[in-house]
Length: 131
Image 1 (tube, rainbow, N blue to C red):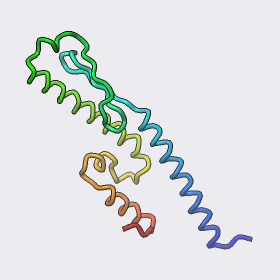
Image 2 (cartoon, helix red, strand yellow; image 1 turned 90 degrees about the vertical axis):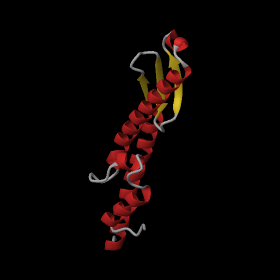
Image 3 (cartoon, rainbow, N blue to C red; image 1 turned 90 degrees about the horizontal axis):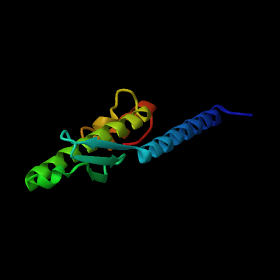
């Protein structure tokens, strides 16, 4: 025989299991994601993983050899920054489904909203006690 409290517990546990599975899936997607960005002059390509870490830098031609060091450095910074931005957008998109529609994963990752604030907002909506 089931009781209302047991039914609520079972429902909460089923919800938890669905959320946990969704988080594991999203985590695997983020781990397997990479973004490659090529400089406008086609001289450099940078690959960034789902965590925003540079995993590869390729010099696609010998053009970098004749570039002044400051120009090459600026080019690398520009391409790496663009790769990280692209990775951040991809990762945020993969995780957005885990959040309520009006909370932005991109805002959280870009520093506009803290994880604590996201958890607090989600807790308020579900009646939980996370503070």
